[in-house]
Image 1 (cartoon, rainbow, N blue to C red):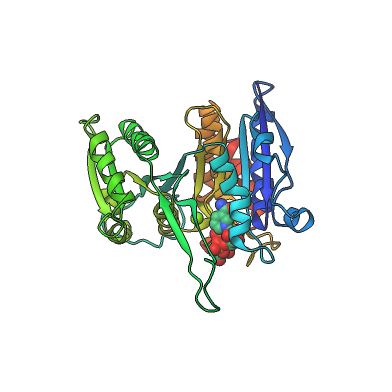
Image 2 (image 1 turned 90 degrees about the vertical axis):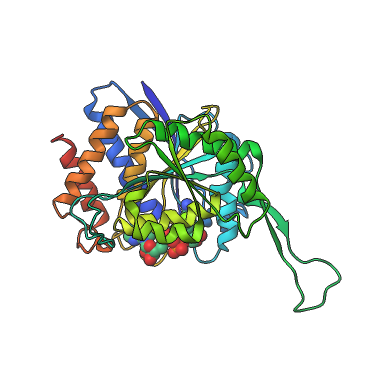
Amino acid sequence: KKFRLAVIPGDGIGKEVVREGLRVLDHLAEESNGRFAFESDFFPWGCEYYLENGSMMDENGVEKLKDYDAIYFGAVGFPGVPDHISLWGLRIAICQGLDQWANIRPVEFLPGIPRRLNHPDVDSLNWVLIRENSEGEYSGVGGRNFSGRGPGKEVAVQSSLFTEHGCERIIRYAFDLARTRKRKKVTSVTKSNAQQYGMVLWDEVFVRVSKDYPDVETDQWLVDAMAAQFVLHPEELEVVVASNLFADILSDLGSALSGSLGIAASANLNPEGRNPSMFESVHGSAPDIAGKGIANPIGTIGSASLMLDHLGLTDESKRLDTAIEDTTRQGVLTRDLGGTYSTVQITDAIIKNLSEV
Ligand code: NAI
Ligand code: MG
């Protein structure tokens, strides 16, 4: 079978790590002896494209992505283009345009890497953060520059938008996922003491939906306390579901606990399968290390593994995960993990380990 991929390397280290992810995918296709293949179309969208064309992507960009089997994404954002323009013009435009409403972000320890978390009872981190990816705090509702006010008196409004439908589908997704896991536990995160409309609606939907899953244990937390819980009692977590902004923040915390932002993978899913899903690392374009060849490609290669799984290539996905683990266990690490290996060398090691699993 031939899978058609839309590849959007984007900006900064996005380009460097997507190149490595594609090398891994090409290797897997090659050794499958024609069982499957990838055909990649490249879309040069991002900040350079913006500076030349005045927009982050083609006018009908989202439409052009619709017929692909999956989208493989680097990262967007670079100095010279305001971050809110680059993020909204590309990543959020695609996620919302293709209704990729479930963002899946696993948090796991990899062997052989120095952890930021030294918890006496915890020798493995293994939870998955489910991020609502279509509305909430990133609904884009609001505005600036209310008329009639003088200099220094501007007012800005940024509203969150929560729909019962939006809350229900992401919460159900979390419960369905929890059922497939060992512990069968879902933790919901809001701030419904201070955000008294949308987050209270979320809480109510959570309690209602939970009644359909009597076999799943539940827990509800406020986000500030959950930030501490991530650090103090990670063993209590299995499936964590939260709004767009809260899960965005918590996923950087989770990846840092497991070692580095550079190793965190993610999938933006359209679970109904009407549109392609998009696979990308959790980190951004990291302008501070771009062009140096030292970015950690594991987050993006791990996202390729999530993509393989999504495309039904489950064995290949598992083998790739094992090859990544073997690589870190061997101490082949980039600088963010205390090592000295380059982006390309990490990938070389992963590909070499693939031939042994
Ligand atoms: P960032 O995630 O790009 O970088 C944060 C820190 O982590 C930096 O010190 C960076 O060097 C380090 N880091 C990130 N990924 C790494 C990797 N693979 N290997 C080694 N070190 C790594 O976040 P930052 O600096 O806040 O944002 C930079 C740009 O990226 C901004 O324009 C922002 O808007 C954009 N961004 C885009 C995202 C996306 O496309 N999904 C997500 C987050 C930020
Ligand atoms: Mg983020």
